[in-house]
Every structure is written in C-alpha cells, then in structure tokens.
Image 1 (cartoon, rainbow, N blue to C red):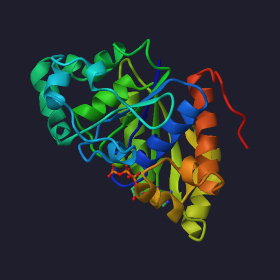
Image 2: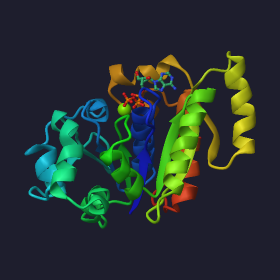
Image 3: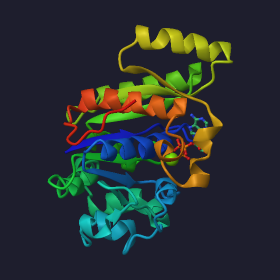
Length: 261
Ligand SMILES: Nc1ncnc2c1ncn2[C@@H]1O[C@H](COP(=O)(O)OP(=O)(O)OP(=O)(O)O)[C@@H](O)[C@H]1O
Ligand SMILES: [Mg+2]
C-alpha cells in the first residue's frame, strides 16, 4: 500500500482538487484506492456526495476505540472508497496529543492506523487541512509521496522551500516531495517565467502544471471528479499526466488499466 498526501501549509491552492481527481484516476486505472479526508471543512467528502459524519468523531478513531474500517464509505466509483471528515476533525490535534503523550508516537499515530488497511488498498490519498500541525506532521511521516500544489509565485516557492527543509530534518519516515504548479495562468508573465524555468532548475518539481480554468471550479457544482464531467478538458489531461508521474514515483501496478487518450 502506497500513501500519497496532498499537502501545503497554504490554503486554497488546489490540494483537495488534486486529491479528488488523482484518487479517481487511480481507481479508474485499477488500483484499489482510498481517499482519507483529514480536513474538518470536509470538501473532499462533499465532492464525493458523502455525508460528513464520523461516528464517535475523530477522538474515538485516534484512540483506537472505533476501528478505522468501520468508518469507510464507498463512493459512486468502482474501486474508490472514502474516509469522510466531519467537524470533530478540528480537534484531531488535541485528540492525537492526548492519546499519545510521547511526541514521537503522537506524530506517527495516523500511520499506525493506516497499517490496518495495508491489505485492503493499493493507494491511499490523504487530503489535508492547510496548517502545520500535529496532523500535518503525521501526514508527512505516513506518506511515501507528498504532492505539493504551488501557485507560481515567489512567496509560494519560499513556503515550499521551508517544507523541504522541515522534511529534510526527519531522521526517518521521510517522504519524497513532488511539487506541481497549480492554478497556472499563462497570461501572467511571472507565471510563464516560473513555469519555464523552475522544473528544469530544481529537483522535485513536476513538469506538469495544472492550468487555472473555471471548469475546475465547477467540480463543486457537479460534485464529481473532473474526468467524469469534462473528459476532454486540458485540466483533465494535466491531472492524467500528474497521475502518470505518480505511478512512476510510487511504482504501483496498473492492473486493469484502460488505455488513456
Ligand atoms: N486549477 C484551478 N483553476 C481554477 N480553480 C481552481 C483550480 N484548482 C482549484 N480551484 C478552485 O479553487 C478553490 C480551492 O481549491 P481546493 O479546495 O482544491 O484548494 P485547497 O488547497 O484544498 O483549499 P483548503 O486549503 O481550503 O483545503 C476551489 O473553489 C477550487 O474549485
Ligand atoms: Mg482542501
């Protein structure tokens, strides 16, 4: 089982959009896939038309009083399940710290919960809230690959460098970072310049940029992944290339893969 997190300390940069579309593509290409919505806003839960309700809340889950598989929900799509978030997830930091007084254990608690699902899924996506918290630290330790959507600006790149530095300091359970440009607007000179130079100059930055397009915003209206309602959009093609890159990074097999355009 491989774990991919969609993470950035910044909000509103395309984390949930990436997690939802990539999880869908992963399932469609034959991997048994789970998306764990870790954000109390529950945006991924909403997009998959699932009720934001976790029996016993984040507390019972984190304390191991309710098994993680009891919280799993099926989606409308074959091979794709969801672990929904509800508003109790706003307390997850506190719940983790209370359940595990030792800091090292607290930072790896979600990883241990996911161990129970190791035989059930090939790929797990973690959609994270915008913060640098105990939950984020858990996510960074649990993930094999952390996808980092960044808007092509200088300050956003600086935030990415801070994340890279933070992760480099881990003594173990260090994920690979894979940044990609999100909401790229080629009408803007700065965006064009950053898109043209950065992926060549630096490691860990994807050559695939997700364009800023209103068809992506419409996901919340359709409440469906982009490839379902806009299969021929350049945005869908961009997420498909990102998924192909991820397959390479994760080394997942694509059983039953259907040929892509
Ligand atoms: N490439 C894009 N082009 C246009 N709109 C986009 C794009 N990517 C995301 N959006 C829109 O921007 C908003 C924020 O996206 P999203 O929810 O994926 O970000 P997020 O990083 O998960 O936010 P949060 O930090 O609140 O969890 C949403 O309305 C989404 O539809
Ligand atoms: Mg989000």
